Length: 180
Image 1 (cartoon, one colour):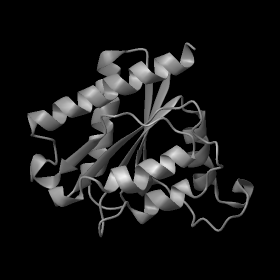
Image 2 (cartoon, one colour):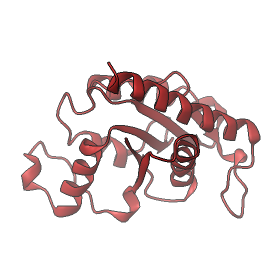
Image 3 (tube, rainbow, N blue to C red):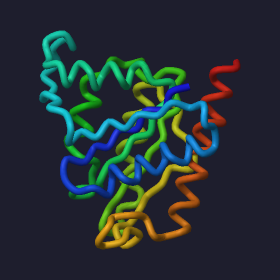
């Protein structure tokens, strides 16, 4: 199985590190799982204008195809202005309606305020459901004070444990889908 993580932040390291922590946790649970991190900072994904995918640049084409070829995915987003990042929403606008059918789609979000913990639930979850993704119950919101200020590593053990539980639930659900 291949798990692809998508970091929807164009600035800072926290979201990318949190998504990567899910990938690392999945590998610790099952070393046969292949993982790949797509950090949107590393790609020039074009603005979605409703054109066929073949009309977009190579970076856009490559990111979309990596995601479509994954068995399951974990999406990370910072919370900006009480919403998911525009970069992540733009990326999702490039996909067809059934893009994530039979795929588990986990969510990790980072934000300054714990008041934003429901943003992924009310904004990203419906979008992933629209694409027919199966959303785990254990999605993770990480408040910025859970990170070390200098290294951006997660220092909150409770958050690290929730990340491990998310990885475990995602693997369990995806195996169930694959074995049906």
